[in-house]
Length: 358
Image (cartoon, rainbow, N blue to C red; front, side):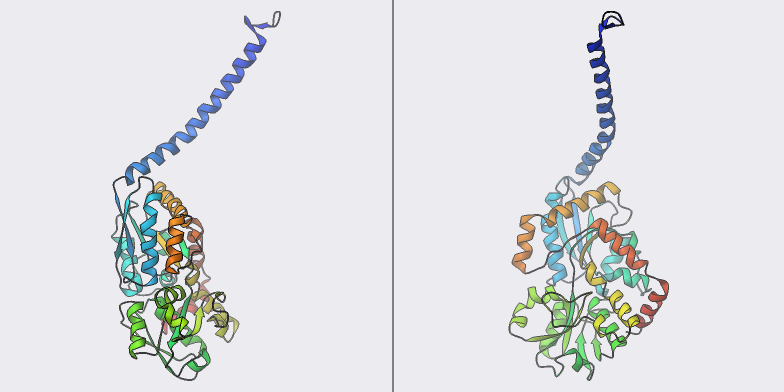
């Protein structure tokens, strides 16, 4: 250094020059980090622009699952990069197994197929139910709209008016397929807790199953509580139905006097089994995507789902239809699925023994 100069430049200028190079290096590093992210985002947007995304619904039209799926389909498109058109397609059958198998094996694995199917499919797969051609953990779970507390109820003319009555006399219930939650929950309860439910299968959906109750073909049925509220709210208001039991991990705030299935267990093992079987209600109304879909598109779909759950138009849509909203992110939903399929083998064998006897 000579008289404050370094290599012919003032020291202050030299220090500024060194700072500028450091700052420039930081900018270059940041650009190196963000540019791939920006390129990926642009790639996702370019992919979805002008595309059609199919929402496959594993239920007949008109029931609560259909209403939830269509609500998501109506609003999620504007939150997906590229704003694709989202269309709904009903594919009922086998308690939604037809739709689940289709999404896993047949549907395009490119992020253009979403689905809403039964929340019991992880448990059914774990228990080795027939006609299952998927691995639940390999689906890409996009998010949950709301838990789905399922209830069993009877028409007001039935001699069975409480769950205690159902322990004393046979009570007929309408249901869809063997794998439907409408069949699984009351059947398992019957096998464990001396409840005398007799399942009458073969109805195409919960709407037809409930109509069978009105026609006197059966005494009662099962469906989600929100479905009963949204499609047959007058039955509740006019006391046309009596809710006997709810398949939830804890009593729903609107059904404080109705016992949960687990409360009817006669020992800790039965309680544990009934809680595991009822875990599907926590999964609730969920949206999934095909396996082996590019990760950047799954990320975009999950964030679009999250944005939809906060969309004022979507919230208003559910409120006007009398439907609940209690969302869960796709990441948390994926972890919950893993927890179910990773249940201890000894407990699963006990669940399987009861489940298979339905």
